[in-house]
Image 1 (cartoon, one colour):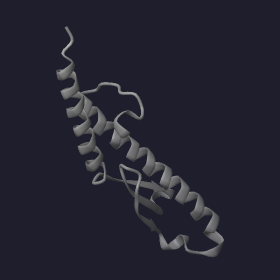
Image 2 (cartoon, rainbow, N blue to C red):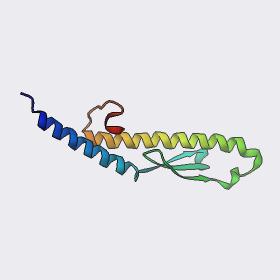
Image 3 (spheres, rainbow, N blue to C red):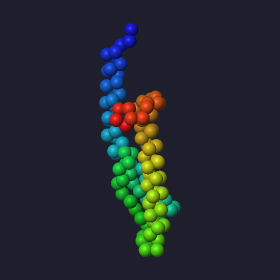
Image 4 (cartoon, rainbow, N blue to C red):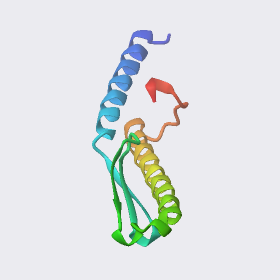
Length: 106
């Protein structure tokens, strides 16, 4: 016979661990870089941008389009790194189980 109460307890424990992990993701920061370091974007694993650094050599009106492209690239790099950090946290929490997207408020 299936132990429904045991399964419910495990689900509650997993949900509690998921909430704890979500809280931890706010403290994990990654840095996306583009242009060989001319532009850097600091972001949490929850995709909150914390800071942007721009090399002064790009602060010329004629370099505006280059700067815009480098910002987009750096943000994309930071986002990929944040997603990787989140996946690593998830795998450590679930022991490598593959959970469907959106489960437990992801």
